[in-house]
Image 1 (tube, each protein chain N blue to C red):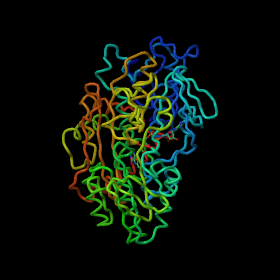
Image 2 (tube, rainbow over the protein chains, first blue to last red):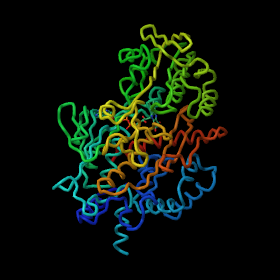
Image 3 (tube, rainbow over the protein chains, first blue to last red):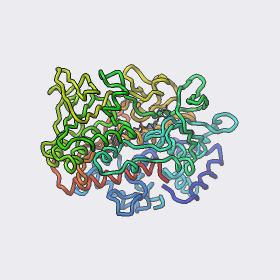
Image 4 (tube, rainbow over the protein chains, first blue to last red):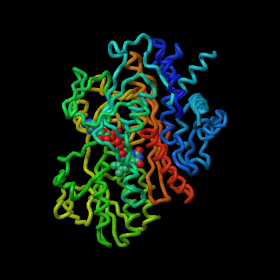
Length: 116
Length: 426
Ligand SMILES: Cc1cc2nc3c(=O)[nH]c(=O)nc-3n(C[C@H](O)[C@H](O)[C@H](O)COP(=O)(O)OP(=O)(O)OC[C@H]3O[C@@H](n4cnc5c(N)ncnc54)[C@H](O)[C@@H]3O)c2cc1C
């Protein structure tokens, strides 16, 4: 989640630009991409933040927040979960196997771009 | 390239934005602003309201909810067990209103008029909508179990909506004799939170271990199998020995009649059980407003289009959370939140006159066996051949170290914090 207001202001400015603003969670900006083929990254990320939200406790959370990590590191981790049942994983591997590699890459990039 | 990047950044995620003023879209008349009304400020509704505003900051989002404080069912079993305070279950709507720009109306929806696209509130106010999302949760079916009505529930609490009922059950547990019997009546599927009764059994046993050393917990179940059964049975035994006894349908576990005054329940084969505390979890149905709006069928639940959760019966009305028929997704808070994200995107697409984006849903339900012992079930769901299907998932392993169980207990706590923060927090 973005902290501070600048994101919101930029966002507001962008939407008042009007007719070109697009509804569709990123996808509408990519003409030619059929909706049916891809899950918008915002939808995917909405699932993740149910557990991996902002840090809300003082102690080290057992479920890490995802914002601001290096995209490659994150992607490697996610791929690891998807490919096997690493001893380190409790439930991540059960969920990660359901994503395509492209989706994992988009998620990693998405969270890397967010402020911590 | 540069603008592309800027756009990407803008769209990066939940904190960012998806302009609603899509391709030449006149939304809701001259104001060019659409209004989405959301009924119910629980897991599904509050999450939907927030997601809508995040995806489309220009959208007018009105959330109708009668309570100033929402009490979560998740972790209410921990309150019964003495692991959490009652206060810790409460969440306010202040951030949704001030920070996320959701207009929160503190009232109950009494009726929906789909022709005029209006929601009527109990005080008579009418709220027009372009799209309506209902997430009213469940109502008890007071006619389903002989002898169990609202008056009986004051003596034999269900505690299946968090609030006064939960406190009542806790008080009864505290007042129980040292060697008392705690009896739970468990319904057949579908009902809110499939593993909930079995987690509750563990939490009650947890409380008794310390405070009612000779007390027993008896579960009378209308079905023969339940969620995470092997893990629960193993955990109960490991942690609480013989304290918890489960009787399924084939063992005459189905309760057909209750006598609240005498604190007796009667099974299908006429066996009568008397107990000191009786927790009756009755059969359930979609919340009243869903039934009133005409989105439910004879099952009492709301059939929805799989990709969007738009009602199959009433156009432009979406039903999410426990009220919807979403199998194989369980009726869980996690699923309600997940459905809220997918449906928010679908509602925006619909307002823009576009096809809905491809959906993906998640679930994970943790159940506490002990303060440092939890088990879980997870699933990812996609649309396949027009139906919701689990594409990956699983449960905790039966063979696992104490450390593994402890880690899952920590995950459960972190999940609760993250989830409530993602919905009601800053
Ligand atoms: C003991 C127990 C433990 C649980 N533990 C977990 C868990 O660990 N993890 C998990 O994922 N799930 C858990 N659940 C399940 C979870 O509580 C539900 O699945 C979840 O609350 C469903 O969300 P919802 O939005 O459908 O309904 P709710 O969260 O119940 O929200 C419904 C809201 O709608 C409002 N409302 C109803 N009618 C109207 C009206 N006419 N007008 C305005 N507002 C209205 C109500 O006031 C309420 O605030 C548990 C449930 C129980 C009973």
